[in-house]
Length: 500
Image 1 (cartoon, rainbow, N blue to C red):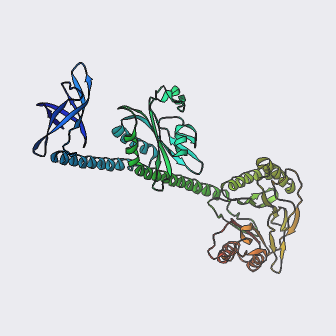
Image 2 (image 1 turned 180 degrees about the vertical axis):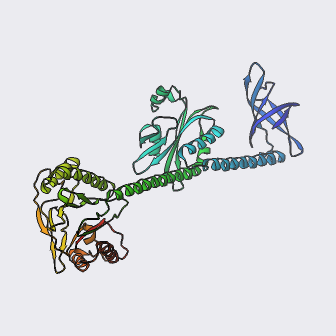
Image 3 (image 1 turned 90 degrees about the vertical axis):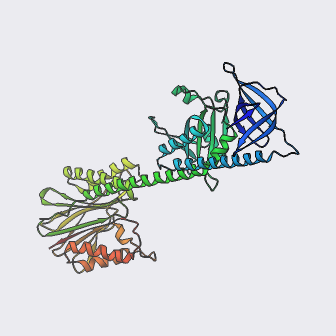
């Protein structure tokens, strides 16, 4: 915008209700009065102005900047001047709103934290004129702030609330301006020394959401035009809501991505674990076997196995690791591998279980334990030698009664020492062996009532004589029906062996 001062064209830098700043070629004396002629909306009007100050902009090519105060009649500016000022204010507001809309679109254009930082820095460079910046997210649960560092081996940095300028802003919710960073004792030069960058000035502001909670901190470095001040704070406050929404969306996106990654990992873990459960052996004379394991989570700590032993004997194993989920699954797979190695070199079941007990205690220091049943079945005679290390008592049905195979030692892994004993039972022709984990007898209905061992043994009695494949399917179905839709809180594993 231009105007005429003594018929000389001047550039209007800004204008307000009390005066204006203009750039011109000839010096003006402070205190002198001059007519300033505007052309606005097709009309010319003149306002008398008093020179408040006159500063030299350039000595090589004479340019000056002067502050002029309007001389008002009866305390009122000329009508055309008032109209011009109102129009300029309206245009400024329109420009401000357009800037906010453009900034909001850019800031909300991505859910990636690094891209979000780049968008915010683009806005900051265009509107505030800064060189660099860092966008910190607030982790309220851990009382930390964190930021993605592009192009760095670190990848991510985390600071506790109160540490450093950004941490202090997160803790207090108060903005900080450093006009000369190196002269301020609060500024830490470590990063500058390491990177070779020189921080001259800094603006560090909290980012509030609509609930007035600090969700982030924006740190901007080295304003290239003037100094950080109130106008910068006002502009950032005007887009704080938009930054907060974008940051919360980015955080939720990261949580969803991480959840999906975990779900993929757990699904892969479930597939791997399912392959660790062997198929029930076939081709053993006079014996039918079926097995099933239903984890309550993606992976679980229940375990069964079948081992080919010398003299045509069959190893039968079932176990239950304390706890649930990934840790239990890892213990389970370790026990399976260790048992397969031990069974190949050791005939005595009690010594095998003792070795497993020592190994698990060494691995977990007593923090995890496994209830374990290990049996050696001779198909020719029906004899079953077994060690029951604190596991749910298996049952042998002969059609008329159930025989309970009680514990012969404590669960493995609780203490490093201790001995185990073995027992022997005969499975008669037509008899059935039921091995199971406590996910069956501890299944609950909506009233919180457990199925219990008595009811479970009754189910076993009814199933005697049925083909094992039908037995495992029907027993799991009956227990699921008892639960009536209640989500299981434990894995269910069942092994059924019938001797014809």
